[in-house]
Structures are given as C-alpha cells and as structure tokens.
Image (cartoon, rainbow, N blue to C red; front, top):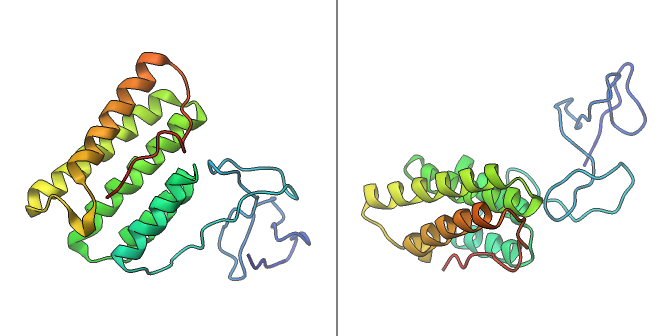
Length: 176
C-alpha cells in the first residue's frame, strides 16, 4: 500500500494522529492482518490482503471467494464479495451484499464473537434467499442459494448451542 506522509505525519504512512493514510490521504488501515482479518502489530507477518475495488466477473468472484473460504479466510472472501456488491449491476447488489454478510458471519463465528456471527449468518441467509425469491433465480452463477442459506442457519444454531468458536476452513460452505 502506498502511504503519504503529510504535515505532521510519520515515516510509516500514519498522520499526526496515528491514522493510516493512502497516497491520496484517504484513511486506509495498513496494519497487517491474520487469516480472519484481525489486525496484527505493525511489522508483523500477516496474510496477503485482498486488493480493494477489483472488478471481477461473477464467475471469478465466486471462484476467488470459494478459494478464500476453503483456506479459512472468510474475512478476505467478504472483501471479494464486497467488490462485486459495489461494482455490480444494481439488480445484483443485494445478492453480493448477502454473500458478504455470510462471509462476515463466518468470520465472527471463527473469531469467537458467537452472537454477532449467528446474527450475521441469519441476516445473510435471509438476504440471499429474499434476493433469489424476488428474482426467481435459485442458482445465480451456480451458487446454491437454498443450500447456502441452510448452511448459514445451521451454523448459527451450532455456535449458539455449543458456545464455541468454529474452525473457518473446516466449516466453510460450498458456494456451488
């Protein structure tokens, strides 16, 4: 990431208040992150971050997100879905936003935020189901909406029942 050192800034790209900034002066968190998206200390070895604002085909979005989910990186999969949500056609934004919510729900469930994880899993399941019903599409881009919604609801119930964080890679959904 490119950083700008402005008036009162530091040599590591943070401004006088200690906030990270990109080359245009916009706030951007430059701290490395772990596989679940948790910030690590500056200088630590983190996992490679997903570039922001990438426009992908829907098929590439689904494939890249699936690879990240399989690798136990649902936070990073959420960023891929977020790119599709922000750059895709208006009629598909609710689909991609719902998929991003599912990935964030899994992220929280893996981090141990069980209530937040369960809530986001259910919210994402409802969002993708409502989108599919409204559009009359049950497998957009090959994504098994009914199976994915079932997975999310079952995982939400599991984390609430067990009170334990999950292994994101072990419980990752199959999108197709």
